Image (cartoon, rainbow, N blue to C red; front, top):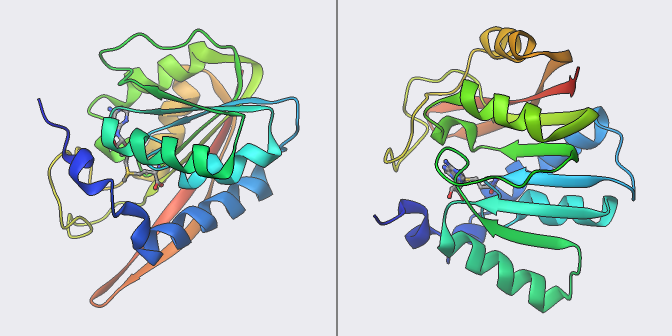
Length: 202
Ligand SMILES: C[S@@+](CC[C@H](N)C(=O)[O-])C[C@H]1O[C@@H](n2cnc3c(N)ncnc32)[C@H](O)[C@@H]1O
């Protein structure tokens, strides 16, 4: 089956709004999550690595996971061109493929959750991959009316209700669940917002 993100990968980074959004999400992440050279991190739905490559200099290692071969090919070229040694690309969809055992100190994900059909199952998977006290940081859209995506293929959720997501995280056993606005996304006819939800493995 073809992955719709494969075709979009080659010019993904050419859109300044995507680079800006990733930078704002990383800034929110830095405010909320203590980073350090001892941390093993995983970025789920890493795409071309806009977040993973920002994170890499601040941690020991980033496992950069995506289901799209095309996205990972772009990331691999960026890793090679910049001589980056601590970002490890991995093609996987944790709904169907085995996941690395971990333990990870930090799992991040930016703008990917709304593509995942069963979010609760994925969050339970993350819980099992995090080491004791490990941190989860999820950035995605607040609830929207479906107008955000020009390419609706693969969109499973029109954003998320922060309270519902926080309750879901708590019900799975995450503690210290917090949500904050990470970015505002201006479009000609509407402004959308993206949150960063952080939580600790309990
Ligand atoms: C909107 S893009 C975001 C990419 C990147 N995080 C960024 O901020 O630029 C969503 C990414 O999630 C990946 N993706 C979608 N569903 C996935 C799944 N079930 N498992 C792994 N990756 C997935 C897509 O291939 C795509 O690269």
